[in-house]
Length: 77
Image (cartoon, rainbow, N blue to C red; front, side):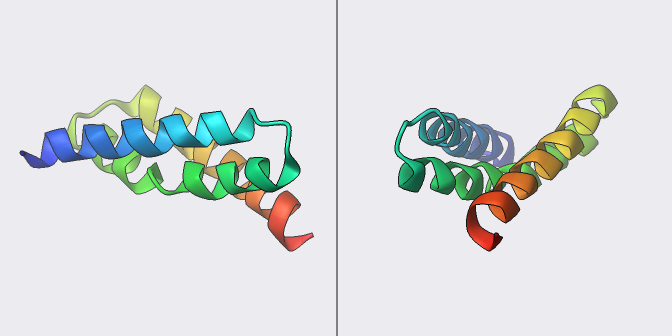
């Protein structure tokens, strides 16, 4: 498996699980979605920088902020 394939699997697996968790009715499940959603963010940054996808890079910054906001709201206070 190449690094590119690994990054795509990383984004797909953790991103998919995060969306599924955030969509749950139960608060305990939903709050974990924000943590899991934050996990693939380094992979997003890596792949967008490597492939000069600056528009997607900006979306990744926005997603990172949003996942962190969810972590703060559901875990910190």
